[in-house]
Length: 368
Image (tube, rainbow, N blue to C red; front, side, top):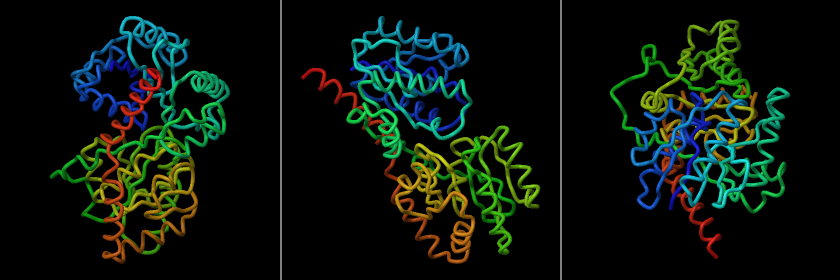
């Protein structure tokens, strides 16, 4: 089976679930003996893709910035389909060619956050047009949670019956515990949270941390994330609360360090106001790290009734849970064990296998 895989758009991102998803699909699809994988890539990413998917064929093109890049990306797709004659075209971040090719098309829609999170007038209009076209023309839509499936059907009812839900995976369980230790200020307990954008609601994690310290617990907070939101909102908040000296702004964290960071944490505090999936949740759980998540978006679904699920600004319940983890080691270990047992089987290999099953499902339906 020949699969044409569009890796142009998501690899322009520096981080986030879309990039991780695209990377892991390429890495693991290239290991299938029965798949001839052709990847469309920008020139800048070719060497990197060669390393993670060495058996794939890579077609390179020059991609312009966002709106200007839209015609060049679709032109590259058109050219690649004409040359390669694939059995399947898979675009992992929404965009399809401007016409229906002879072969089936698969598109991954991660979420419809632009309906709920302000995007700006032009960007919001652009996304509405692209998603409407895509949902009308894709043979199969893969999405990453039941929550996202419900949102897609709500806004695009014609997709009902054409959606397959495939969860993200985690590779934390593949990472051996290293001898490297995160700088932990004399091995004090710590919380971990994530956020590049305002809807991640890192402010809530900061307030929860503040409450735990006010209770008398000598604990730290480690924040993974970069950008104006961290610099202009989160850091000033820690200063105003008088806790900045107990907060570590880690920026981006490499995979190996991230695994150790999860394993050493008292808890993940992830009170996001919107998630299509919530990759840090299963990564933390697979590391044996208890989780505190909000009741928004996909998070209750992904957390699976483990850890603590609360309102996005329920600081009191979250801080009470953390204090109990700190004061009751046996119970905390039980929480860790349950999290690990739940999430350790949610691997990227499982996710990619389910994706390949979708490819074969489409081809079988076309041949019948």
